[in-house]
Length: 187
Image (tube, rainbow, N blue to C red; front, side, top):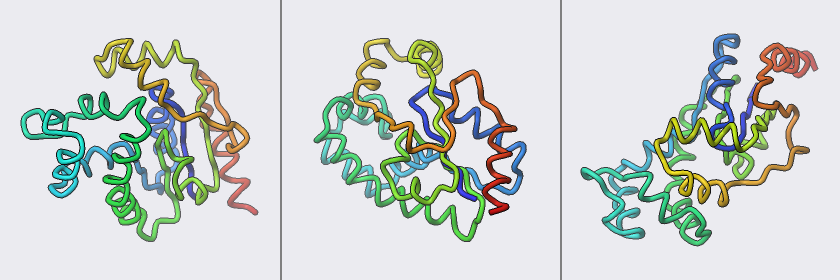
């Protein structure tokens, strides 16, 4: 079974994923954000990013995601260029990780925009209020409230009808997810 976990930044996607992995031992976990970070360090991707966005996105000869983010958030054209450069490599790596696995958990804010969302048997949205997410992100990412607001404004808008389960932040109900999984498997 393929499970897709979505939610805006700081919503609790990783927390839910970790709880599910404790219960569902046979699952492969794919944090698509992490794959994106890894892909940014591939020589050919790094070269394209520098060519497209300038050398000022580098810190210690590595892509500085915060600096790159400042160039692409709130600029659809720049975001599209970033996606065009990185997505083909990310997709290749995701497909490699999936391999022959029948049980996969996808964790990504932008999952509804890619083919893997349609592949999911169970789609979960964690719908956490902005104020809760803001507190978490400011503490976790060490960014300014203004920078967070710009990231938030360029963020995806979810259609709750596209999801099988919509969880409020403080209701990460593993038993509900497991029951849903059993009902799908028994079909």
